[in-house]
Length: 93
Image 1 (cartoon, rainbow, N blue to C red):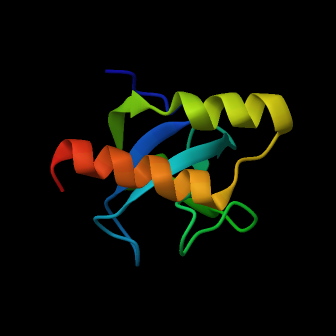
Image 2 (tube, rainbow, N blue to C red):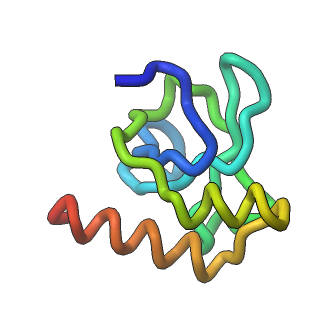
């Protein structure tokens, strides 16, 4: 599996207040830190800066989020909530 996070990749938060929840990588700061958002508590306009070591990278990448970020530079919070909900349901959680 890819060890470096990618934009649009699903992650499971392992540490912090949002522990055990899913989010999507919306930006990569450097090799240690990324910005994540879930569209609910962490909206696109105020993403959470997270250490990659505190995240469990999931094998799936949301093409909808990736495409939206490349085309317009942003993604709606509703779309983030939708893709995370769809991903968690597919995983059976």
